[in-house]
Image (cartoon, rainbow, N blue to C red; front, side):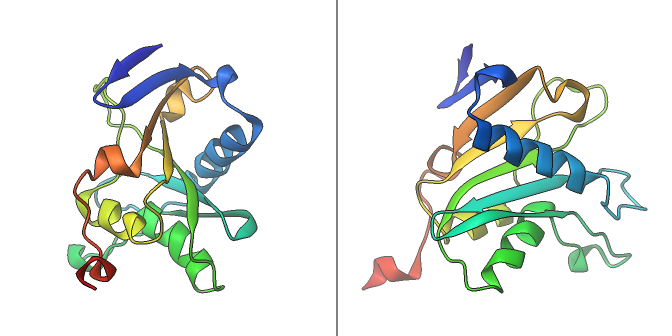
Length: 153
């Protein structure tokens, strides 16, 4: 295991069953990504503190790039529209060709996820080494000074 900025690379087999299910759901969701322009397919899956089950989604691109939506927000929005409000964990499966590092959520997704839980576990995996190693981190590590409107009260 190696540690990188509050994150740890862990062998997949050391993860709990729930984390493995989340990663596998994100991997499956990635297959449905609509990315005709970038060819950068991303899958995400989320679990909730206030509900059972897993919600998942993939990125959906638009020719007007600003209209595109990331996999993380697609997955979370599915649950939010069903009344779920407290994120427990998020798995993201993506890979950049010819790059070693794990792909993490963009800044918009980090802020979005933070608003639904500040103790959210994040699991990052690559499709080429899905069952080998996973980067385990948290939303606090990815967004250390996250902003919430309720902090103004």
